[in-house]
Length: 414
Image (cartoon, rainbow, N blue to C red; front, top):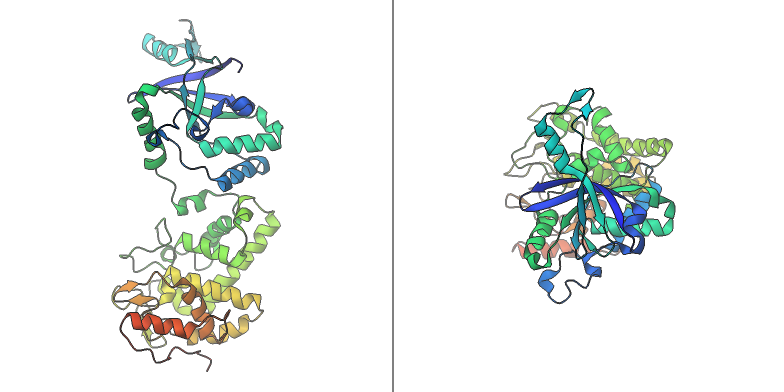
């Protein structure tokens, strides 16, 4: 493999000396100059030397598509280890007359810069493997194979020198990079995402919607759940996002490419229609967001509390299943029927309808997703939902709690 000279910054942290550089994509992927550990024979003798996670082919395809279809694509640095060969570092000397904006550097600054800036020369005999960024590396290869014009673009890399006699040290570094590095929370990704229309419209909803934009509407949690100590927030950003995806009903790949502005607006109106529907049918929600308490819905206190649970409508999971119900009736062009009947449902978590299915002994029940999804359709009169024996399953749940079920959960339209 041909020799290559790379402009570098040299640094040191802990026991590691590292070299930060840029390389053209073609120089990275051609001839497999940089490999993944799984492709190397360095570590096949001992499973404890396997430094790399299992490669996810779906993720590779997503990265390749992102590079080829998104003009604003960007990568963080790929961290690689150098094994074998003889990589050489050459300082770049800076003349003492060197100045920045007419001001000469002092001796300490000059010495620091001279020690940090230089050229890393790779002979081509090295084996270079990804410590962090193995999926990005394979995604680069796939994108280059499909369109070699991308090969002229430049990627940031950080090189560390790997000594096979210190493999435990290298494995420890790999562990730190892949295990302890905190991944962005879902809410943070929604805030930053510029291609995912569900994320784009989530941000717009909580900024512009008459009720969702209010202070108490949104919890500050970065997950889909509201804190157990938060009795004032209505929903979460993650819930708004997930409901958008319920309404749009698209494959995951759809959310990786930004739609046209016209399409984004169309999807926004779809999202807004759901929330407008919810606030119209349940005006109690707006009163709750505005800070009013002592609200009642169907003679039950409309709140969220740790004792009786309060109303399922004030739980993100409840909002999610209401959205699924809304989608069902929207697709059948029957939203007027839903609007007329949904308030008849008893949303009290400890009431006769939802107890044991959504709530038990002061806790939300996380299981039975299939039953929960079909329960509201059953309550609204759809009695033959994909031949699912909903009454039989409810009876089994009651039996698990040593309770008798009297077939009392019936459609509200009866």
